[in-house]
Image 1 (cartoon, helix red, strand yellow):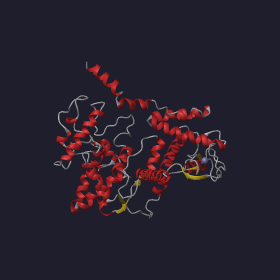
Image 2 (image 1 turned 120 degrees about the vertical axis):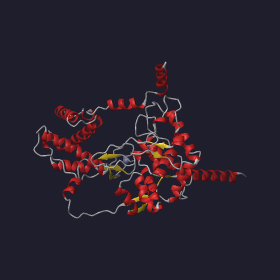
Image 3 (image 1 turned 180 degrees about the vertical axis):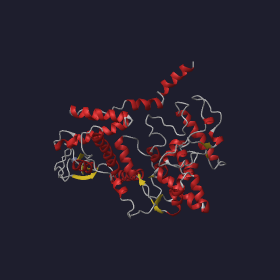
Image 4 (image 1 turned 90 degrees about the vertical axis):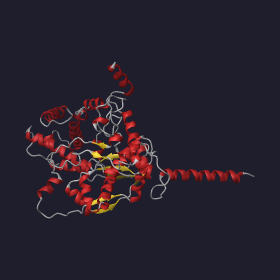
Length: 453
Ligand SMILES: [Zn+2]
């Protein structure tokens, strides 16, 4: 009986999420990107793959990244007419890493093309046949610095393996990381940048705080905003916070033995300490949900838990926020979900991290001499907590929605819902669309009016 019900459940809901994730990982083919390279190169990289797998214990996804980096470098180096990796020199890698940061983009149609060598002149004619614009290419950013650093370090690992394990080369040609250089200079005086804390205007915070108490707010959005503004959550904490075990349903569709809106606390998996991370944050104690006597909080949690139990595919899931798609990045704690929520309420796009900072700043400023203690309770280390007292405040005006609307349109996701006027009283793209419509309506009416005899 039980297994029949499970089967029906799986038929109705699809297989449960955890299994999908494993499936995804198993389908990764690390060597896919280099399959078209010459056989002597692929056999060398095959050996490298074995080493990554057995010695370094790299996951398939990480090995795939290694082969994307090394394979793309080899493809780029075709114009250098090298026959083996042993001929690669430091200058080649330097040029490659420099070029990774740049690309040509057509001003007319947005067609892009990678650079092949330093100081090359842009193609005169746009290579997009439908566009064909003259002299329209300009240099734009291709990879941010951090991604280039990632490619650099993977190339370094590869050439390091070639040198140490394969003994194919004398010296690792990969240029050293800038951060390594900086470390060598320790002791010398370096410029220190003043520490800063970013924040949004109070009017935005007030609008969001009011929205949380609104009984009509979508429950997931309300819950994320509540945890951010009342408890200054970090993104990781949003992803990791758990429901106490007695509030989890015993079986799908069954009621739990206690309701979260009555218990009013959340739990954490105790954080593992390791080198470089020596603070357990606030994860060593359950999180009491405040203010306990406000009816809107209980109402919000009740609505949220109802939605959650409808989404739930396995009762084993302890996390407060659950998604329905295979990717663990999607769901209620994703950027996109959050962008939608803040755009709908304020007409502007806020980020999780700055809103968290706003909340911490409020605790620091209004907490008076208790402020420091509050911040420690929010899980900040001593140094971070103290920094909130003196770091320079930098006011941030959240992004307008237009740019994001265009991005969403390109990706094919549904547009944001925004109010016609944003929090600063400026027309949003929904507002300007309405204005256009009303103007054209007006013109049409005038035409009708004047064309009457
Ligand atoms: Zn073009």
